Image 1 (cartoon, one colour):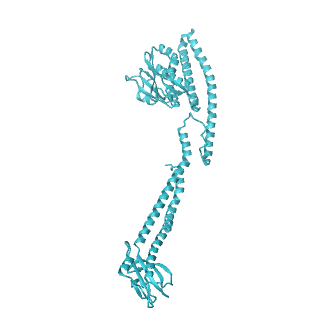
Image 2 (tube, one colour; image 1 turned 180 degrees about the horizontal axis):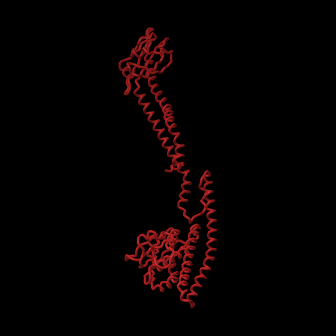
Length: 458
């Protein structure tokens, strides 16, 4: 099993997005650190406000430091909707003036006016603490305020979620931008690829290289060079076909004419059968060479630009060519009828005439003597239909499945034939962006060949 071809889009996206796996966590951590510290500082400042308020209450009485703190004031200093707030105020000798003795025991002994923030434990609970060396007369009194970590934990979680959300949003935006950028960068390649996929043998124009990135323009240049070589090969093929058509038609025409004249002139009876076979072989060779050259010229035309295609009315084309079909129809006692409606297509007239000629010739040859052959043209919406129907013996399902194969003739086919008529019809239809199909006649016998072509723009 062949390995899957690497995807350029996937490779670019992997190299663009893989760094985000590392950068997003780093960005999240950086955003967290940058945002959480101001939040923690704000909460610490709230603790200093409480410490400053307590420092303002300290008094000096008769050389002794006192803390005239009412119950209401103490309650107000401890009030908090989320956390537990505890304070302790001591004198210069370390005696408790107010608050929690257990908190005063954690006094870090600061100099006057100094501040210190630290984490500690109080009654088995983690607390955030601030210590302040407050001035009390000529001495320094310690003031400590502690607060549980509820608001800090909530703030840390909020900051973490915000940082993660911002980083994730940034990552998604970068991923989307990378996807759009890669798609935009590859769009010229996709357009060139789609242009190549849509092209058939009718289009060997150079690819427009203006839209291609410089990094891949050399590939487009190589393709255009290949198209140029193919156009040169087409020119050589057309020249060969023109020369071959002249070289083949002249001797075959002479052979056909001479054999017909010999048959009409007196000749020994024992040579009559041989001369008939010679004349039939000349007819078949002339018809075969004409069809081979038609098929080759049609394939050569497929390699040319379709800018020379013109608007053609199939009904008018049938009318102009009908005179060529009347004589064979009279010779075979066939009823040749027409049901023509305007049917405008875009194409090359000589190819469409060959298509018509092969359809009618095929019907006249295989429908048999006394058959009815009808040629129809009509337009349905954006589709033009060309039908040639006969009430002859038709084809069975097996022969219809292989009818488009070159040189294949049905088992019920009678008379001379090359097996190229229907393949030429299908090929010319495809050159005009259409298709041909076979159907059994409406009465359950005969054959109807339907050619579908796009209607020419008005």
